[in-house]
Amino acid sequence: MSLFGLFTKRNTSAVARDRLQILLAHERSGNGNSELISQLHREILEVIKRHVTVDQDKVQVKLDGGLDGCSVLEIDIEMPQMDKDTRRSA
Amino acid sequence: MAKVLVVTSGKGGVGKTTTTAALGAALAQSGQNVVVIDFDVGLRNLDLVMGAERRVVFDFINVVQGDAKLSQALIRDKRCETLSILPASQTRDKDALTAEGVAQVIDELREKFDWIICDSPAGIERGAQMAMYHADVAVVVTNPEVSSVRDSDRIIGMLDSTTAKAKNGEKVEKHLLMTRYDPSRAARGEMLNTEDVLEILSIPLLGIVPESEEVLRASNVGSPVTLSNPESAPARAYFDAARRLQGEKLEIQIPIERKGLLDWLFKKRVA
Image (tube, rainbow over all chains, first blue to last red; front, side):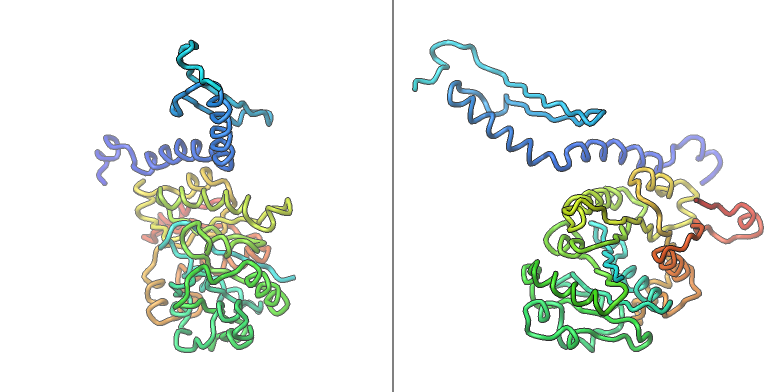
């Protein structure tokens, strides 16, 4: 590589390192929890469906491994308007 | 006490079998009793790399299923008498390996050998899990390349969660072995450098094996590189790695292109 090239082009190894760091940070956060998350997702959805009709895609379950050994379980459910139509008859 | 060592990587083609053969032969040459086991059932190659392909009569599966005794399946290396190989089956598939059968074979080998080196198949499926399950020590073989590093990260996660040690609340001792390292490309910044890979994977470095035609030459003639050409750069890296595995503290040297006095003066070292 010429001296000129050295200053104009970023080393590809640095790009590789940065991409890997971002990717692995993401993948590690899901490690070991993915099974738990999908199970939680399934069971939470089951309970809600007994009472309300919800779209499966509108239920988000996230588990963030926070600092100090404390994790945050985040459940985000988008509900339809609560009226007589959406309530399931028992 | 016998140590079970798994050579693993997740990704294929990074040098697991080459490493198993070279490390096994290096440890055996230092007087240790070593057996290398091929866990790649259906795609065995350790026998070929070790030059024992025409001596296979019984294999690992035969022993696991009780069709042959362990002593009948073990092949003793002709060049190094403290080195033995337990070949995989070429005709069966990985389902033929049962957890109990493998455990029994490993227990029996623990009584006879100092080192039991398990050559893992690529991937994260059954074969790879079987190979790592009994490990006390793991050598994670990684190339300085994004897909290999990512797969190694996954394997490290599995070593910490799905092995016998992990289930007992203990830790598998993990080491990173960087292979196919090209000093000139690293110098030009075209290849992930060792510090970056170490920082990303955060396990200790066992050695850096430079990319070398000696490795191909060794496999051509069916001999571990540490037996066929002990003076070559890759062989020296493997000998050093074997000594580190035995607890010696040796400085790790990053291979550099030997051009002249200037390079020698500025030889890079890592702790």
